[in-house]
Image 1 (cartoon, rainbow, N blue to C red):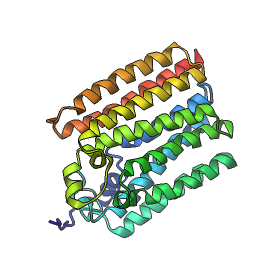
Image 2: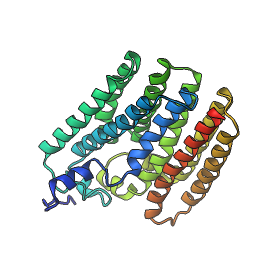
Image 3: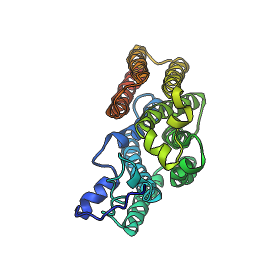
Image 4: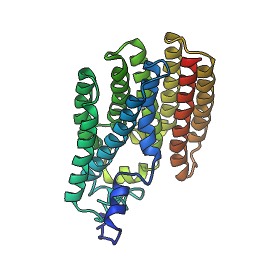
Length: 294
């Protein structure tokens, strides 16, 4: 049964903060991580500070735009989902017009930062825009919309790497593949908490697509991530620090997979596992930096 959202008295500035998910930084950081992986690896551990700043600000701006666009698409779906019913556009704390303006401003900020980059990287940024805009529609027509999100995440690797080298190479594609698998893994976990609502509403997710094998699929995705990162370490001749960080990440991913196999896992645990992947990503980043420099 459709829930009719009612406007509430949340201040506009706070509603915009919530629209951009700045009150939930883990989702912003988890996009930044693959971009930083690529940036530091391409630069052998020491990228220019100006480029680091551009990438960090660019991921924040892109993520902000993606959140606003997603919520504009889903403003009539979100009220029917327990986890999302209080989002500003769903609850009518913000109007559609404000949502559009915020999305355009965020896209504009990302575009300004893109002009700081070389021409090849700039056009990669342009190529990512249609995926960012139309990803929210994927859940309506595509059985595994998390794959579309993963491709969007993968652009963070291509953009950051080419910002340093002005090109792409084998190591880039290994990192891109690892990012695709990692994103499929943690976003399938995220979707597992919404399965009942998504099934009732009639929208798609990888958690529904894989059904009883969703936990196994996540295990395969995390194994693929670890395998491609290992191949990357060999190709780039990364040192002991990287392998130690990858070992820690792999052990945690295996532990997460074992938890997901529990049929009685409480719903909040899926969010916990998603958030754990943020610090896992930073552990791997630290290993990449140290393994490139020392």
